[in-house]
Structure formats: C-alpha cells, structure tokens
Image (cartoon, rainbow, N blue to C red; front, top):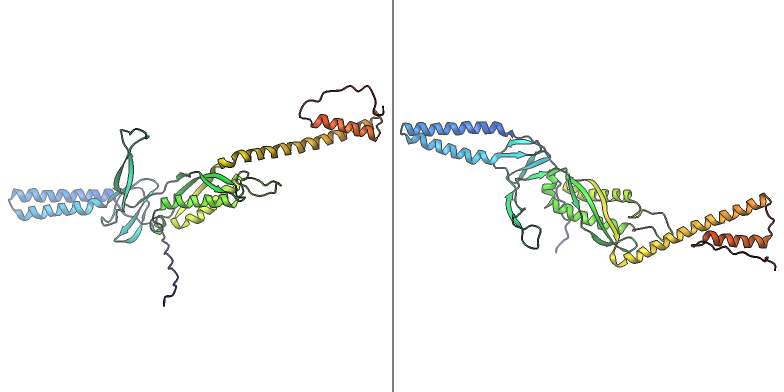
Length: 332
C-alpha cells in the first residue's frame, strides 16, 4: 500500500565570500618556472643528455596544463562562483586578476548572439550563435527589464493592457546559481506573473459612485510600492533584489477603449454640471440677498421665482443668453 510522503524542501544556499591568490604573483612564478624548464632543456641538449631534456619538457607541459586554466579576471560589480567537483567553495567578488584552483568548474556552455556585418533582407541584423563558457561569472550590476504589454482583466473584470519597468540586481550569488535553474528567466517569468496578479487586484479607475479606493490609474505611487513588494517576495529565493518597479503602460483594451472614453467624458460633463449648478444657486442667492438688503426693489414670491428662473437659465446655459425686452408685466 502506497503512502503519500511530503516532498522534501529544497536546501537554501547561502553565499560565502572567499579570497583567491593574486594572479600577477602566480604569473611571475609561472614564468620563472617556464624559464627554468627551458634552461634545463637547453642545458640538456648542450651536453647531449636526454635525461635532462625529457624532465624539462614534461615539467613545462605540466605547468601549462595546470596553471593557465586557473587565471581569471573580474570586472567591477562582477563575481565568480567557485565549484570544485560539484561542491560550492565560495564566491569571489574582488575585482582584478586572480588565480584559483584550475579544477574549479568553468560553468555550463551558454549561447550568446553576435550581430553579423551583413544584415539579411527583412531584418534589422542577422545573428549567429556562438557557444562559450561563462566560467560561472555573475554580473552584480543593476539591470532594466522592460516588460511586454499584457492583456488582463482588472478587479472589476474590465480588460486592460499593462506593462512594467523593473530594475533588479543579483545580491546572493549562491541562491542565483543553485536555488533556481536560470535566474534571468526566473526573474522574467515571475515579473510577468506579479504584474498580472497586481492588475487583477486593483481596479483601473474609480467606480461610478466615486468610492475611495486605490486604483491603477490614480495611485501610481501606491501601486509601485505594492508591485515592488510582491516582486521582492517572489524573487527572494533567487537571491535577487528589486530596486525599483513602476508601470510604464496602462490603458483599456482596444475593444472597450472607445466605450470607456465616452464614459469618462460623461462623468466629466456631469461633474462640471454639478459645479455649475452649485455656483449658480450661490450667485442667485447672493443677488436676491443684496437686492433685499439695499432696498433696490421689493419682490414678492412670484417675482422672486421668475427672477430665479431667469438667472439660472442665464448661468447654466451652454450658449450665451439672448436678452428679451418685456413691455408687459407678470400679471397682465
């Protein structure tokens, strides 16, 4: 009978910084050793004794085989992860010319692209693949990732287009190398997932009744903080630090963009009308109050109603009012 056993959790790697031997010192020693072996060969050839030629040649070949693969250089903000027969030894972060154990792993073969000097028709530049070893070097520099436009539904189900710009860098080289398979691809996929989740968690814009809530369009700072926090939580396992995350594109999907534009225009017109009406009522009230205080004219309720009607028409009309001279009275 089979029993369900829980999956074993992966061991989290921790970076360990180490120091290696200065490459210039080893290079000088190597040159002296080569010179010594050459002198042995020359001296052995001069006395016609093969017993000195053979050891000298073997020593020189051994030095070339063991010493040369151990040299490597590191640029500023670059590190190399040292692996000896499958065991993580440490990470070198110090820039310069170094020498380490020649049996340190040089890393798996990677594919890079190089532009061809003769572009093909219909493309910006033809590319050819070159296979090279990265020697387990990891860049610690800040990197920009301009995400693709994603079509998702917001909190209210409206289809929107959204994309983000993310600035990130590798902080823990051991996690980036051993805890995920490809940390660059991991960052790309997790970033897309985080942006999709963000879009479904917030509405594009405020609702019809204007309730206060965080929206994608109106609260850019809060949305950026939320996106950065979610990305950091997702990418901690890869040893990656998110320095900045912001939306660089946000719009309704084309199929509803025109309808949403008319809705926004209608909401703007309604809001403007509300302000016009409030202002008009205040002006009418002020006019009646001033006429009464200064005893300009005595108005009964009917005349006040007519005056209020005329003033509201003039103040709330979209076009200029045309004056009409009334030769009669309200009662005749």
